[in-house]
Structure formats: C-alpha cells, structure tokens
Amino acid sequence: MQRALPVLVAGFFFAAGGAGAASVYLNNVKIDGVTNQKFEKATVRIDEKGNVFIEAPGYAVKAVEGGPGAGAATAGDSEGPARMTKHYWLVTEQTVPGMTEFDIDLYVNAKWVRKLRNADEQLVAEITKYLTPGKNTILFTAHKVAGEARKSFSSEHVFRVIIGEGAVGGDNVMIDNPIVKFERTAAEPTDVSQEYVLTTR
Image (cartoon, rainbow, N blue to C red; front, top):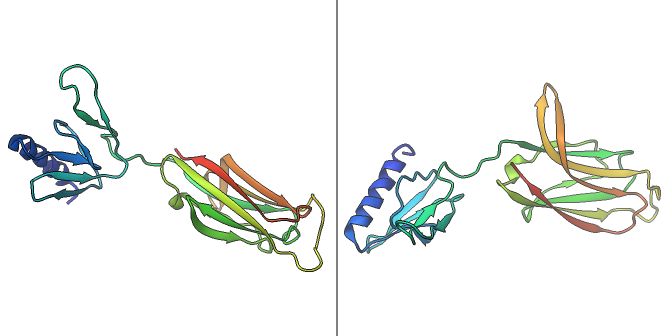
C-alpha cells in the first residue's frame, strides 16, 4: 500500500486541478498547483466537494513569492519526514548509591518516562524512542526521600544523570557526545525541577 501512495496522491492532484472547484490541502494548508511531491506515512481524505486533504506529519508548507506561479505553495521536506540518525542514552552515576536520598523523575516532552531511584545501582537505558526529530524538552524532578535522620550531608555524595549520543560496542555503551547533565548532592535538602532542551540529529 505504501508504494502505491505517491501514484494515488498524484492522481488526486490531477483530479483536483482539472475540476477547477476542488482544492488540495496539506496539513490544512492549500497547496493547489504543487507538483512532483511524494508524501510518506500520509493519510488522505476527500470530502463531499472533492477537496483532497493530506495529513503528513513532518512536512511543512510555505508560499513562494514572485516569479511564475507566484502565490503557489511548496511542500517542504519532499524526501520525507525528518529522521534521527543518532541514538540517545541515559546513564546514572552515584558516588555511593543511596547516600544522596534523592529519587528523580524523568519526563521527555512533558510525558513521564521513569523514576530513577537513589537506592538503585547504575542504570544505562536507551531513550531514543521517547524523542522526536529536532527539539525536545527533558525535565528532571528530584524528590528528597530522606527519613527523620539523613544518611549524609556531604556534597561529595553525588547522584548524576547524563543523556547523550552514544553507541553500543559489545556489552558496553559509549556516550561520545554528552548533552544533558543533571545532578544532586546529599548536601542539598530540598526538591528541585530542572528543564533542558535536547536537539536530536
């Protein structure tokens, strides 16, 4: 079905242009007159008036000013939606597990992903599937979980979270481009939230 889609879309353009009344819309923007375009992973709908609506995430539309056909729209990213070429990993580090008494909630693009517990050993996890091409927001919310008697007040007891581009080699993960670093120490007594922007590529 996907291979037939470009031919089907081309037919829609021809029919809409020839009728003189119906129009073609890409992501709710009129693109009458656009030719030589292919949209991957698109949903096509025709209304009762013959208007063609193409919904294709990852595509943008802009108007062309001046020259022949001025006022017509062009569909950007004709080669398809942007794709990430890198893999992104999260790694936790603690000087002494459990001593900071902070648990950290991780949110990616406003969606909760997981809790990073101070009592756990080192975590290494790929988070590529939670990211989208381009800019992403990473939010860490650290909660102090100390009891009546804190285990440590030392700034040398650190709970660190690193996110970066990396690759798997054998049984190891190598982060060759650390991008985000968040950390708390046992000396810090209160909850805190911190947001970062991660631009994927």
